[in-house]
Image (cartoon, rainbow, N blue to C red; front, side, top):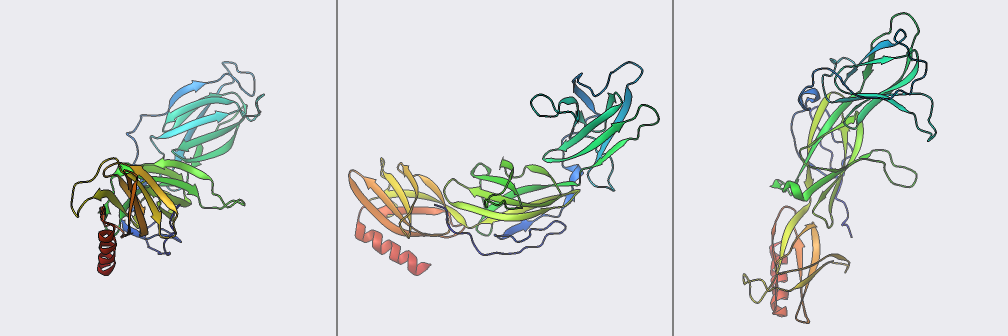
Length: 331
């Protein structure tokens, strides 16, 4: 079971901004020129494959040179690397798909095509653009300039106000902002690691961040602006806990213990076995149930955002009640 989401908090950015955010953003770096956050440059376009399926008859005399270049924004400079170009025939094949005629990787690309019609696609990460190309029999062929209107996001998260979360315990998924009739959203890219650049067409995207594997889930709508990289740090309302069954406070954890974590309403959110398993839980009230040698021990506890701590369950049930009551007073 996943815990309810927290109240809406709107936080402004320098250029791109979080809009209608369902969670607070802890920090926001200044937006950088996105063209600088890419892979090392490749000199020119590299033709990686060519398929002889064409829209007309090819002869040494009728091949036309086609130059294609892409811009991040309409006022930007031609991109020098990170692009994948694809040229398709407009006539579907037997499988109903448009045949792929040629591809090129790098920056500006050059193709030799017979006169006819084509579709040209350029991709930059998850961003892309497609246009129809008509190659004439005679006369000059204009350079094909395509505007990607793309930017990117670099995501991270903290627990509470500023507690660092290990990258291996975080993951992000990026969805389209629009909600379909069935109430779901189209997935754009899944399993995004912290501090990795996701290249996207400009627009609003719905980001889902998972901390751990139980119920620490945060959602936010993020605006991507063309030509810019937005660094967003999302604030999780959760904490990492270590469960221990002990004979006395601060004592050694007892091995071969089976654990269940329940919400205050009695729903099971986590189960594990071990002397001191760790679990990440969203902020809220829970019940820890420990089973050892056919006996059951339990205690109530509260999770506070960013407060990573041990949850000790004592063999003395009265002591558990007293410990829970004492923590309630402190809270």
